[in-house]
Amino acid sequence: MSIGYSIRKHQAALLISVGIIGLITSGIIYIRQPKPPKVTSVTVAAATSSVKPAAKVVSQYTVPATDPRYIAISSIGVGNTPVEELGLLKDGSIATPNNIYETGWYGGSAKPGQPGAMFIYGHVSSWTADGVFYNLKKLVPGDTVTVTRGDNQQFTYKVITSKVYPYNNVDMKAVLSPVQASIPGLNLMTCTGKVISGTSEFNERLVVFTSLVKG
Image (cartoon, rainbow, N blue to C red; front, side, top):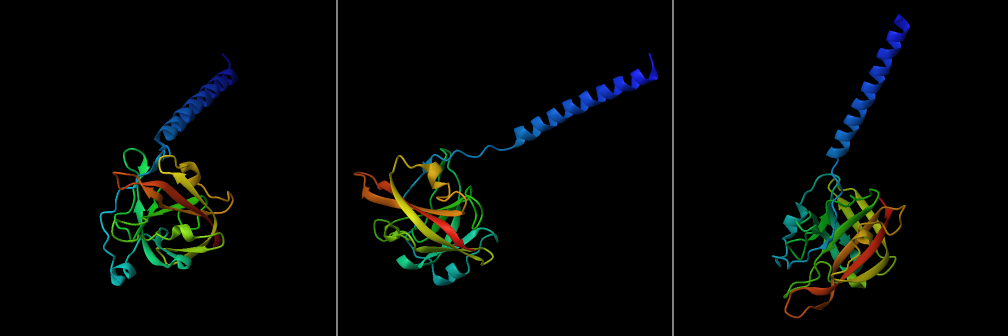
């Protein structure tokens, strides 16, 4: 056997080994990548609190620098309102805020100004008081929504359109997507319609779709 043949044989074996290692490594990386959660709906349980937070508590509220801290919608009388982070429940639905005077940002959605759509939910009411998004239905195209981040940078979104869905048939793909594909979005949701007899559940969901105009 010639020296040249031996070298070529070892080179070929080395290339094959590297290729196999690369495939195995790629396989390991692929396996370890978490799959995006499948969001099925928004679970709207009755808020546990109807106590309005004190102004001092609101002013001292903090979140990580790039997370949404406050939301304000001047056209419907919503001043700086705390935004808490929401996760997913075991059934794949998004949780909702515990207080009717606070809002919730689904942490699996975009952050302020980022590509994609940020999703924020607010209660419409309790049995005794109007919630933060009670007048969300009054928003019209052109109205603006301001989101303040944890580092106090502000982002302004413009209302594009609104849509009402049956409570048990919300298009979550649309809700978690920007209404204008190339522009970061902010989609707001609350309950609307009528209370289903024998429950505390409203029979419809209102979604307001907005797009970033400044930030």
